[in-house]
Image (cartoon, rainbow, N blue to C red):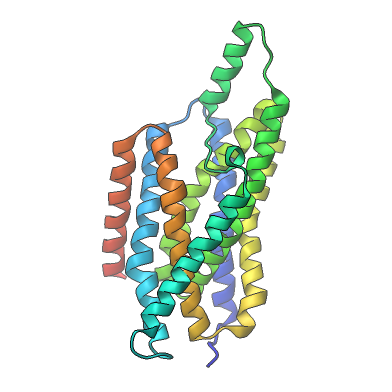
Length: 280
């Protein structure tokens, strides 16, 4: 049975995905407007994003996927297939991580202070900043983030097709975690080239991978869209988000050095989602 998706629903889903992707550009702008990184705020924000993603995945996306599969299959098959899709989503992100070299993985955060401190140390010892390395680091992180953002774009798009109650928490959580990724791209490129426009452009391009993922989902999946395909994708999206939370967001939050802010963010994210879902 086909699902009817009207033009406005599809455009709204694409617009929300585009907004999430553009948060990398916001991160780039924040890096230029401040001389220091508010690490406590970033730790809390990343924790909040992880809390939202984990709560929504287990309390909304997976149950919704099982419910939709129950209209097609009987007994324990709906739960079994949802679990299979959930771990398949995790596997996709794990493979992407495996293909990206460890030192160029977007999980590696580059703050303003780190670059400035290294430059200061080199000047004191008579050395020169390794601009070529900074530039390569920024470019490779931009590429890695772009690759990561494709499945995130699909996740945002698929969740948005299922309604605003699914879309908003997913899109907001992805947008929050894209901000430090934008910083990670722009800071090394700016310090290597001194060109803010170039640093901003590469950050922006890496974020555009998310709406590109949405476009791929639109043209590849929509012709076959039905409740069963929708259910499999919702479960896979849940797997993607849980993996991102555990593998990327929480380690990054800890790396900024504010453990309690990160944990408080996780709890706050879950609490906010619990209240929001009750009110929606």
